[in-house]
Image (cartoon, rainbow, N blue to C red):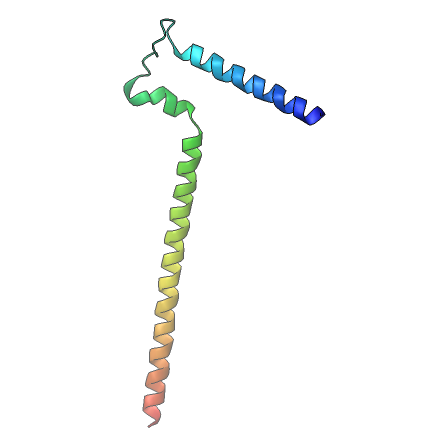
Length: 92
């Protein structure tokens, strides 16, 4: 019972925050305030997109490093196979 009450209280607080945020965004006449070119203020305040971009950059860096290392490994394996083949052919 206690958890259900806490959950309802949290939902009411979240609803109040949403309502306060929507009132703060309007200029009083019900129309939204201009936010500058392309909503720059909103994007500066929004950190969710920022963390997503950071994760994408990290993922790209890891993938690029992995591909480079895999290529280097493949070149080393190819070199070893060629030298072994040359050694075997020289025995005949």
